[in-house]
Each structure stands twice: as structure tokens, then as C-alpha cells.
Length: 222
Image 1 (cartoon, one colour):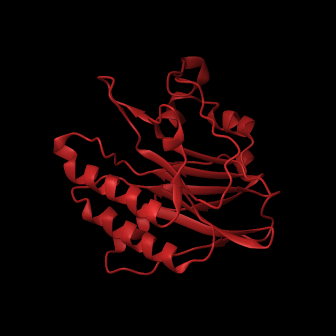
Image 2 (cartoon, rainbow, N blue to C red):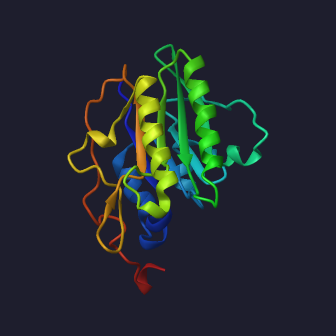
């Protein structure tokens, strides 16, 4: 069975383009991994099961998962802020369970919180026999500047660890895999889509540069 997956941090796009969710509807996705989601319109909720976290949302098309979606939790931790990094569910497709994780790392003063979350995620993967899809805005990159060296090392370690656990970084396989550009033009991949290597990738697509964020609202849009 084919599954069309979309991952996107909606923060900037949500206030720069009034018809954002109409555009999302045109993409006809089955599973949406969204971060910094402040409101999901009612017309979208008619077609999707919605699972919300602190800064995350998972949207599953109702035609895909009429009754099979259930919330998923990592092992508990003494660090209670870890639960704010993700929202997860398990769906059943073709008689097989498929765990989905939408992740948002709101960079705080200490990278150890997100590092602790990743350790729990690794443990979950090691104990699971299911194929898993992990997407979101991790806000870390191995090429970060020296001032963010700890986050850069964390990104490098994460990529290596998930590769060892049998995952592909789908976005990294693009010719130019940046997902964030700084004002001075530097490019970083801070958004990721990891899939179990047993999942066959049929196609990878991203919107044209500026499709959303370059469109500023006009008074007539308000």
C-alpha cells in the first residue's frame, strides 16, 4: 500500500499565507507531520484524524485510518519536558502496525533535554519489530557554527545512530537537502524524515522555493 507523507514546520507559513491549509489540501497527503501548529481549521478536521502534542500535530486521512489510530508513548522519564518534544501514534496498514513520530525540538538552554528524548526514541526502536516513520523539525545540524557545536555533535550522532538502527534519512538523499536558509544565505538541513530501510520510497518532492514563505499577506487577505 502506498502512503503519501508530508512533514512541515508551519510557523512562518501559517501567518504569511492565509490560504495555507487550502494549499495543504491540494497536496492530498495521507499522513502529515506538522510542527508549530497553532490552529487546524474545521474543514481540515473533517477529513483527518488529528493528534496534538505541545508543539506537534499528526494528521491521518480518515480514508486511510478509519478506526486503527491509537496514541503511542515512549517510556516515562524523570525529565518531564521530554514529552513536549513529540507526538506519536500507531496505525494499522495492510495488517501491519506502523508507528509515526512527529518531532519538534524547541532549542532551549540545554541540549541534554533533547538528547535524553533521543535516547528514549532509540530504545523504543530497538524494542520494536515494526517499520517506523519519524519526521519533524529537529533544529540541529552537524554543520552548525562553533557556538552551537554541542547541537552539531548531537545531529551527527543522531544520524549515525539511526543509520545503525536501519533508518534512511530521506531528505538527505536530495541533491540539495537544505530545509532552512539563514539571512546571510547559509543553508542547513534541520528538518528530517527518517524511514525504516524496508520502506520503499517511490518519490520525494518539495514545494518550489518561496512557495509559502515568500508570500506576504496583504490587507485584503485579513
